[in-house]
Length: 315
Image 1 (tube, rainbow, N blue to C red):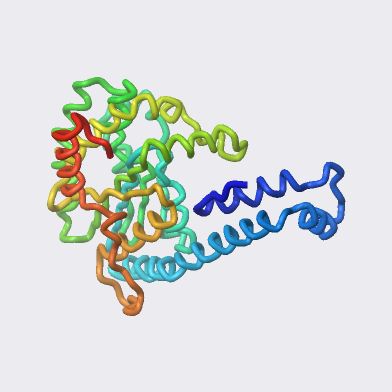
Image 2: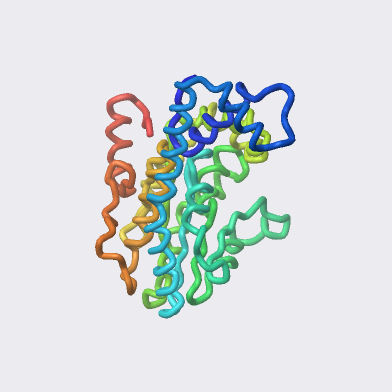
């Protein structure tokens, strides 16, 4: 049995071992069934399962101090009337949803919302593209996390043909001024733009898991099914995104997310560093890992160098 890594790997390892070791005639007594499985497992399989279970446990424990800090940050926003908007964009199967769930797990749902908008209605298609997102903006003291944002118009839509070339160009020309307008409110609104970046190989593995797991098949979308074939097209749109919409007042942060746990932890650190808040744990390491969290301008420079060397960007 080949060992897997990460939280999903730990669960998958246990499920696979149970599937192989589980007797054909299942016992109604759960304790007896567990004992039967343990009897069938080989020593190496038991060691691998224990190792992955411990990894799963300690990764969850590793996030808890940062989840505590997220509660403190949320309380600070409530007390000061500030608003926070966090955008989660990037590749398909790059871990955006899982990261959002870890961030919001213990936060007050009354003051924290996750927004994942579906396809626009016929009426919305006639309106300003960003309008339906602005309608979801936080009130004073709220945090809103967009699971894909208005930047769909810069990434998915042009690649998949969901918008015209003219619509894409107009959005790219106007979006920075839109953001500047709603950020000019005396510092009341904090905007954090995150681009989750996964390698092509890791993305393929995650798609395969979705195909084979009945509990995750709903995640497979039309876009997912074409993402691998359109990899270079998405990369080109990422390049233009960083080139045109990374600004000093509204920067992009690229999150390397092949390792889901590190991506989740470092994203929390990045969020917590956006604003000073009372009660911060001074003993907690909040310095982000530069191998995981990359400023948008640095990512752009890397992509330019890769273009010069290989004829195309690789990240």
